[in-house]
Image 1 (cartoon, rainbow, N blue to C red):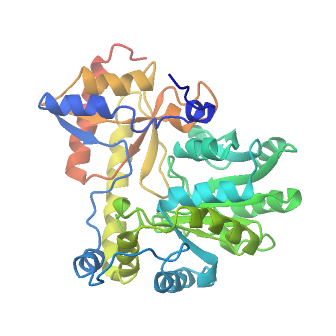
Image 2: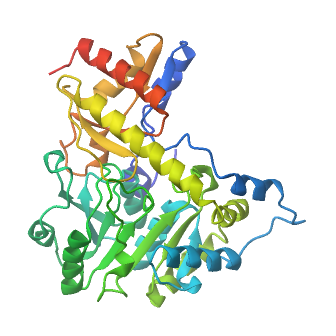
Length: 398
């Protein structure tokens, strides 16, 4: 029998989706499962996007330009200018989700064996993109006690080796919900400039910043304009995860042109997704105000309710719609499986994302889970009650 490739063996499975079979079995047993494991909002997709798909009147669903439909790129540039990011439409490449933007950026900027420094915990699929590109992820640890603030700059600088080619941040952060300040990003800018590194930034959750804090984009860091690569997506902003439309944005023409060669090899991003995404740019302001207020209410309820459970702690996230929660358990991976396979409360259970999958350092996150507050408050109330009752009887409780 032919042997699987080494790259295939090195490619990590998604730790977020590993528990799906246990959730499916729980449903087959008649239990309701509250899915808090993945960032799939229950917020309706804007009607303007759905109408654009319904009224698509082209006779042929054809390839677009490999960098995306021009009218969409032009209109998207206008969106970025409206949030204070001054770029031209020719500096925007439309990708198949933010995932492809990250992968193309890694393949364009790094050689196999090069290193990228990422604060951990980080979005688990960064490991997968790095494995595909042959890039080594070098973690620098942030801690729940500090609310997952960016680690001290000296710790980051100590991680730099001759193979280091870049640093990556997600702001606001998935999985922690931490919002990096302008001061933190400017300190990071100084390291990037000193060592002439790339700075990758995943800013998918830009609209979700709370408590009066404002988002500051890495695209507005002065002095490293040629070093910055921005990744974005419509998935969360417009509750349109299945559209699979993202963007790679850079002022570095060589990076753009190199990434475009990878884009040409996959021909074009999805046509219907682009049609929906372009229409989404006309979403009325009231939509975002309603969504913003809903997420604040969900966050405030969830954080308060979790911290009232004996032995449970979570910081208050400043953005996105995730929080990392420390549980009084021996092993969060085992607990997340057990609560699906062996426990229910009032015919319901909960699906969580064990935090170990968001760390690159072995052993970290062992008693932590990520919770996505993407369900309405009534569902969150029931889910928290299920979690509280489960912790009372879990055999591995600490």
